[in-house]
Amino acid sequence: MKYQFADDFWWGSATSAPQSEGAAARDGKSQNIFDYWYEIAPERFHHQVGPSETSTFYDNFQQDILLLKNLGHNTFRTSISWSRLIPDGDGEVNPKAVAFYNALIDSLLAQGITPFINLYHFDMPLCMQQQGGWESRAVVDAYARYAKTCFSLFGDRVSHWFTFNEPIVPVEAGYLNDLHYPCVIDFKRAITVAYHSVLAHAKAVSEFRALGNQGSIGIILNLSPTYPRSDSQEDGVAAHYADLLLNKSFLDPVTKGRYPDDLVNLLRANDLLPLTAPEDAQLIADGVVDILGVNYYQPRRVKAKEGYQASDPVTMPEDLFSYYAMPGRKINPHRGWEIYEKGLYDILMDLKENYGNIPCYISENGMGVEGEEAFIGASGRVEDDYRIDFIRDHLKWLHQALSEGSNCKGYHLWTFIDCWSWLNAYKNRYGLVRLDRESQQRTIKKSGYWFAETARQNGFD
Ligand code: BGP
Image (cartoon, rainbow, N blue to C red; front, side, top):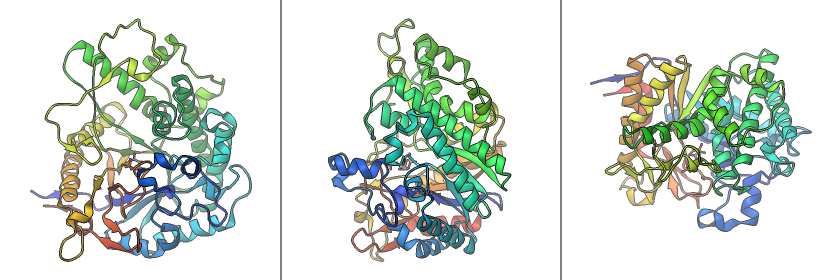
C-alpha cells in the first residue's frame, strides 16, 4: 500500500533555541533559568553536561540549514531565545541577536524552508524569574512586549508563529515534580503559573492580531491521550481528572477560549482557583489560536487511586488518579516512554470531533536512543532502522486520520541534529543527523536519508 500525503504537506523537524544554539553566554545573551540552574546545581544534569554550547547552531546554522535542505525539509521550527533578544527581559533589544535571527530566517527562506518560530521553550530569562517568573503578572506583560517585538522585527518574513511550546511542562516540572528550576512543589502556585501562561499566550495573540501581520499564530501542546486501565467507573473518573488537569487545562482555553466548567469547579471546591482580573475572560476568549501544534511521544495511562474518596481534599493532581503501566506495552527503554502509535490518531480524531477540527500539525514526535554509536555501520553512519520504524508507524496512523477527515497539515520530527535535552543532556539521541560532540561533525543517519526520500515523494510504500 502507498501512503501518500498532500503536495503541500509540511515535512520538517523541530528544535529550540536553548537546546541547539549554544553560545549561551556570548554576544550579549543573559542567563536563562537553565543556564543559571546548571551553574548552581550541575549534578542535576546527565553527566553534568549543561546548556552552554549545546549543538553550536548559533555558529553553524548556515551549514545546518543546507543539511535541512538535504533532509527534504520544507518547514522547520525553532524558537527565539528571549534572554538573547532582550537580555534584561523587558528593555533594550540586543542588536547581535537581531542580526542572528535575521540571518537565520533569511537563510531558511533562501533554501525554500518555511520558518516556524516559537517564542518560548521553557527558557525563562533569569532576571524575569527573579521577578517571579510566570507567577507574576508583570512578567506576563513583559512577555507580551517581547512577543510584540518579535512580530515587529521578523513578521515581514515569518508567517508561522507559536506563543509557547508545551506550556504545561514548566508547570509540572518546575512547580509540581522538582524536575526543573525553580524546583517548587506547590499545586496552588503551579495553577497560577499555568493560568498566567495562558494569559501570556492570549496577550501575545492579541499583540499579533493588533499588528495586522500576515500569517497565523498558534501554540504547541503536548497532548498525551489519556486511557483508563479498564471500563470501570472508578478508572473512568481517574482518566477524566487526568485529562482535565493535564490536557484540557491548556487545550480548552487556547482552542475554545474558555476553561472547562469541570476544571473550574474542581479547583473552586479545593480552594485552588488562581486570582483573576475582570478583563481576563475576554482576553482568553480572544486568544483562540489559528493553528495547534501537537507534540506526541507517549500515551497517558491511568487508574483509580487506591482508597480514593470523592470528598477527599485535593492537594496535588495525583490525589485524583494514579499512573498505570499497561502490561505488555511496547516501550522505548532509553527514555522509559511507551510507544503507542495509534495515540497520534486518537488525538487527531479528538481534535476533529470535539475541537471543531481545528487546523493542526504534528509539531514533535520522535525517539531518543542511548548509545547510538553502537549502531554505526561500516559506512560511518548510524543504521537507525528502529527510528525509521518509529516514524513510519506513526505516519501510518496520521495517514489514517487524514483519510477520516483530520485537518492535520504536517509532521515535524524531534529533531534534526542530536541536541541537548533538559536533564538528559546528550544521553538520548533523537536526530536524523548524528552529532559528534568532540569535533561537532554532523553525519546523516540512515533515518535522515529515509526521511528525505519520504518528504520528496510525499509518502512511502
Ligand atoms: C519535548 C520537548 C523537547 C524535547 C523532547 C524530548 O517535551 O518539547 O524540548 O526535549 O520533549 O524529550 P527529552 O529531551 O526529555 O527526552
